Length: 357
Image (cartoon, rainbow, N blue to C red; front, side):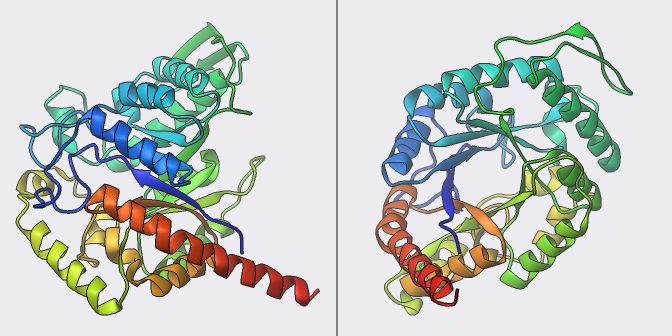
C-alpha cells in the first residue's frame, strides 16, 4: 500500500453538501476558496479541484465562482498544492486554453493540471448560444481538442487539420514547467468517456461508488489498450462524514441528508442532458455531496473511514478528492483523526510486506 494523496473540492457553487447549512452559509466567493485551499495546504492536502460552470446549475440567480481566473489567483496564493481546473472544451478554443494553462503552469511553478469535462449541463451552453453537441460527438470533439492542446504543450510547431480545428504553423512559449506537460484528469462513466481517458488522460477521475463498483471499473479500464502513455492512475471523489462512533456519524449523515432535501434542484435536474450516464448511475446512490459523495462509504467512526480509504488504495485509488460540511471544521477533523490512522495502516502494511520478502 502507498500513501494516498488527499485533495479538496473548491466550493464553487457555495457549498459542498446542503446549500443552506445553519453553521455554513452559502458562499461562492474567491476569499473563501483561498481560505480553504490555504488551510488544506497547511493540513498536508496535496491537490484541489475547481469545477467549471458559467452559471450555478441549481439556479442562475445564485453566485458561481469562475474557474480559470480563480486557478491563476490560487496558484499565486499557495506554495505546494496541485491546482486542477476543470474545462469544458465547448467553451474554449484549444489554442486559447493551451496558452492560459501554460501561464498558470508558470505562475504555479508546475503545480497546475486540467480536468477535461465534456459537459452535461445544457442551459449554460444553450443560453450562451453555443451548440450543445450530442453525447458521443462531444467526446469526439473533446478528443480532437485535447490532441491539439497537448501538441501545443509540447513546445513544437504544430500543423493540424481536423474535423473541428485547423491550426497552421503555430507554437506556444514558454514551454511548460510541468514535464512533459500539465497533468490531464478525465472522468465520466460512459464508454466514450472511458475510451477517451485511456487514449488521452494521465488520471481517471471516478465518482464516489462502493468499493466493489470501483474495483470493477478499474479492472475494466485497465483491460483497455493504452498506447505510448504511462499507466493510467485513478482518483476518486467522496464526501466524508466521520465521528468518534458509527452512531454519531450516521446521525450526522441523516441530518445532512434531510438538509439537502430542502435544496431546490429543479433547475439542475431539468438541465441535465438525458444521455449522461453519470446521472443515470447516480440515481442508484442517493446521499450527500456531488459526484458520488457519500456513495463511496466514507461515513463512520475514525477507524472505519481510515480502513475504507486503505481498501480503496489497495484496489488502485491513489488520490481522494474530498468534500466536507461544514468544510473547515470537518477538514480539520479529517487531518487530525483520519490521515494519521491511514498512515499507521500504511506502515503496518509495508512492514508486513517486508517481513514476507
